[in-house]
View 1 (cartoon, each protein chain N blue to C red):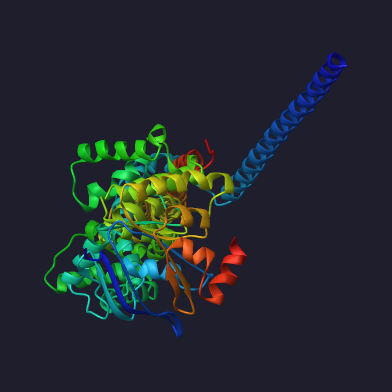
View 2: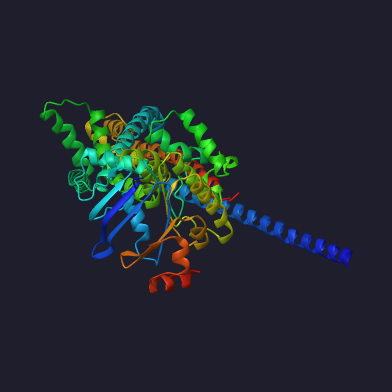
Length: 250
Length: 281
């Protein structure tokens, strides 16, 4: 089987600060990869480079066969390619970023109708299905600010899934939530993993990582310090840094 | 024990409710008193002004006679102002997008436009447009020339309002739109501008009210608006003070009316936010 994401020697600077110093790794279709690391270790930056919210300076990245235009001029073809890559990849943010001026169902159909030019009726039908799937169909006509954080995040997941992505990126999806609301979001993510979605998850929820992840990547000093199955990383890490970090958060 | 406890609790609740009601009642009375005093101050100052104006030896019969003639200018004033503010909004939107653009050409055009318009008097712009365009073979009558000049002028100032409104929309919203695959135009139209509008509308209302009065400047082009009519009959009869006071009163009345609509619109907008944000369930 071919990897769905291939990352080779990815480098990203902010001004003079080297955040990603030559990351290389592959992700297989259906794989769930949890990325951990101290704050500032570049975990979020890595995700954000993949869908071009951040522009890396060098390296090669293939997403579902499409090459990220690293170092390339912004031609019309490149712009279209970025959009194409983004529509193949859903992203869930720490602070949800639902569109506050639209109802829940309108949030969910926004991508399909505006970007994919899908027929509104079809989009609504599938949007309702997705809302049921994340357990939010009752709030169909509410506005985002009438929802709790956990509810918002479930809607945000539905909104991303409405684009029928092949890959889902989760950037600390539960970090902004009250502790009692974390579970509902994690269980939706677990369900998604069980359905075979390729997922890259930046999180500190080690229970989720142990249960759902196929691999854990520990990032530090701009590189991958350790990469392996959750069992191994969490119980017998090879690197001292990994052990210290896990001791801190567990 | 529980029975007496309950009774005590009810008694206490009643007392608390009474105190609350009393407070509400007092707050209402205080507000009424406030409004009453404000009205008295307004009436007082207005009466004082009337006394002063009376010293001008105004010819009231003349004023009454020419009131309808001057009033006919109100429509033109409102019409010119409305069309001007609409053109100003369009220009301000593009000006703001240019100001925020990373493209040096768009940024350059926008900043040059803002700089030259803010750096020269409106009256100069009005004449340059009215007298200059025909030199280039574009013959334009007074009303459209006035509307273009006012629109171009206010557009430059309102660029800042639009820019602030657009910039107030958080990065997260833009990133969410991008991650769904939206283009810049789709993101602006669907996500940023609808949210920015809430912040743009109230100050734009203010600009419109200012525009109502600045539109008096197009009288120099011979547009038959309020001020032009007032000056016209005033000069003919050597009674400038009378006609100017009439024109002033009309400007004031129109302003009050639009201010009323503006505050209603603002209330509705803020209610919208409360409805959307406020409650959690």
